[in-house]
Image 1 (spheres, rainbow, N blue to C red):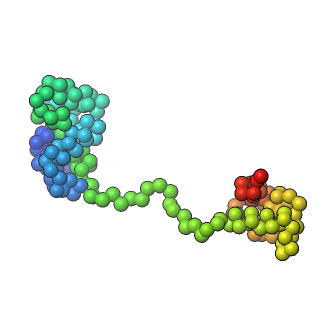
Image 2: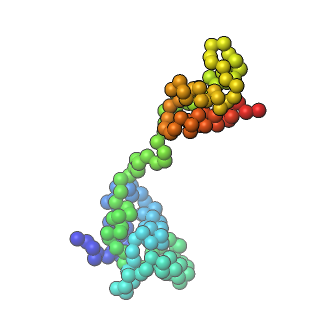
Length: 173
């Protein structure tokens, strides 16, 4: 509906006070936020009834700052009109961004299953009396896979290789 609504920077700053993400900020802080959004190209600008391309807006702002050294560096030119829809898209957001980022955290229960089986492989190779004897890490891994103790996807050979790699990781000399 407000697709063609363009506001001058002063009007934008008056409107910005209603956005929840900016509520309670000082006028100078809002002015800096608006300047940064325009400089990044998040808010479209119009000059003399022509939309200023995103790549040109930063250059135009630098030229204005050079021409008006008495003004603060983050002051927008008064003849630049800003798109109201873009303004809403950038600043009309909730105050707290509560999205979780990154990989989901797994619950760790101490050692992984493979590490516990690696300890059992170590006992097999050390000829412990309570477990079956094995002459090599590969043989011990195949015995555990054959007994169905190794969980996970893949063929029995790949599970045995995975267990053997884990054994070499913890018990290599």
